Image (cartoon, rainbow, N blue to C red; front, side, top):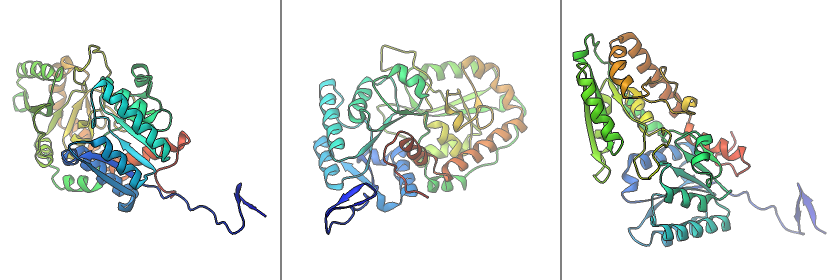
Length: 360
């Protein structure tokens, strides 16, 4: 006679099914794993889940989709971090790839957690909508209420979420945090920008340099074109940390005929604070959950404000130091709490998906 245990019917001699072990799979090419973004994704994931629960797949230069399919079938992860930047990028191929991967994840019972770090990219949005459907989350760098207007095809948007950051990297950077000297005259002020150059950012920075120079302020731009090799992580954080204050835009590259996309919580928000510099940046709707304008960073909505107000504010040494210290304290609090994977876990539970982290 069959017996019942908590609603599960057991035949004579049959034991309860073993609980499925939670495992997260990350997937990227060789160059991808060298990028700071993926180094921190992997490092923070291991800190949150444990090394045994994280699988890092290395994609080959060719036949990536086939390799990814075999990778997922062999390892059978419970959750898969999907980034649409790898794989086919033409409409027809991307469509086939998205459908195939979505079907496979559904077949093996794996929950996708996708990343859309550039809202204007139509191909990436289409791939995510096919991979996720209604079975997973999509991390975005904007407020989901806004994202749903621009990309209604993507369900379960979560954001804006800062870049993942590991406690190990932060501890290394904290040892290099500097005490900056008091600045009393505009002619002594210097603001830095470090990062990728693309439109409209390049034009914004060029105009900012001209207008700030009229105020006796030097805007030092250290950048690279999107097609150029990335600045090495150690050098990137050194450049950020050496500057008393760092400016960033929050606009995405012009990759669409539509150009009124909202500001994104670009990675520089958390990277600059982790490097210990004072961040000067636009506010991003919904990002107050992580960083409060004029508390953790200095809000700068546009170039007019940058040239007419920021130089005066930077001469208020006490205010500048307070915001810089608040930013350092906040990034420490976030990273040490495991904000990234805890947010994903909370959102999975809230939507009725299998949790990623073990119960505490």
